[in-house]
Length: 116
Length: 112
Image (cartoon, rainbow over all chains, first blue to last red; front, side, top):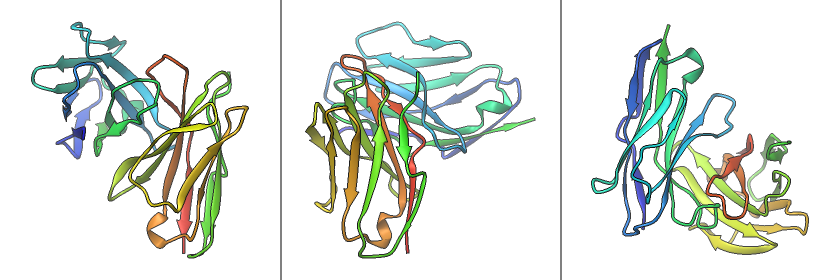
């Protein structure tokens, strides 16, 4: 069974600084998708960024980028120029087929605090 | 374009009762998945429906069931509620062939 591990229950960063959230996963599949989701106090899960395992290039979305290390099964999220609105729970997630068919496997989450 | 809509947002039920939660996916999305979120267990996959058929199911007892209608709207039902069923229930929809799942705001179920 696939597992996703987020080893940092909580992280704190000063506004405008850079922070990196860690995620490791375990799978025997060669093709899969990885995601970072953000869950603010409103509870709605918001997709931050996605990475296809077959792509060597790391995904980037504005201030958010990932460091995908397939051999190490590592998928970290870097947030640059942190803003107060980035404060939330961040979940790393894994899926084999994409499109939701097999369900997402989530890590336990990292609570990100932004210090003004 | 409207997002994923879940109703109701909050629900309080008594042990032993049953409950039905509703999810309307994004227009054009035919896949609907359900997740349970609790402080102890985190986010866990319940089941997924596509074209009115359950394609996959997580490790939950048979008290948890669901269905999908021809317009892709989905409902999940929990019978004989237990205190441990108190959770945030999240619904997500996906477009065929696209890996992203888009979530609703969830239904907060409290069992007393």
